[in-house]
Length: 109
Image (cartoon, rainbow, N blue to C red; front, side):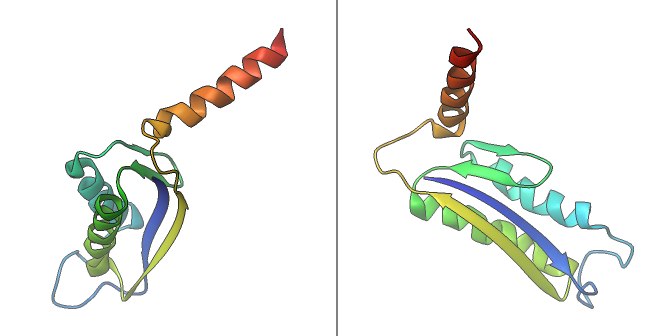
């Protein structure tokens, strides 16, 4: 499965924990992306979403831990998630994009 997700804090940072009061949203996003990168699953981060590929339980474990990494940065957390569930397929993080590029190239001739 492929999952595209975005996680961000809102509200004031939680008292008594990290981060500092001047922390920015990019610090929270960095904490989430660090979890994704350390997972070892295929992934890609863009300006709006992080995409991750793997088995259901593995992907959602990473999304949960990435979300939990953002909790200290605000009084609440927003999670936006989109999933493409296609059993038996792998390599779709790049495969879907490559098929699109091939279709575009075919129409240029």
